[in-house]
Length: 148
Image (cartoon, one colour):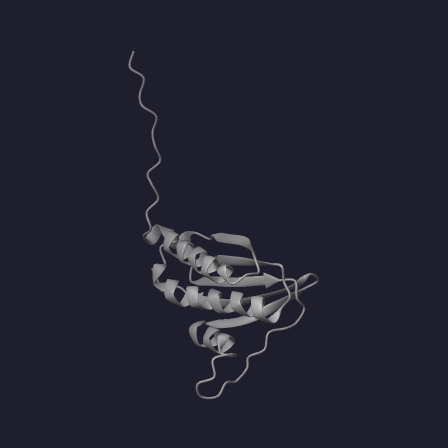
């Protein structure tokens, strides 16, 4: 008697069926300069895996700025980087630290380099903000996903 081969589930494709997926990815990383680069790779991988790689340029720049701010402006030992497909048309990128110091957008003049982080985040994102928690805060930015 022949035994039929087990059926394999087809490999998931990144097409319109992907529009119905709500997904989340997060990592806890040390507060050190290398972390910003690792966070960029994490965001890029998540967005590409979810089939929305067109957001990778903006998403990686946003997470780089948020992680850099946490490293420069807090005395954190660790940050938690998260990428979440909140709805079919919205991705939220967040960085959590244990500091209670709230983010503030510095208006910069001309060629000033420091202080541009949140200005860039505001320019690249649909909206940004922060959530205060007992153990610190999460600074986040949202990107709009193009219609499938």
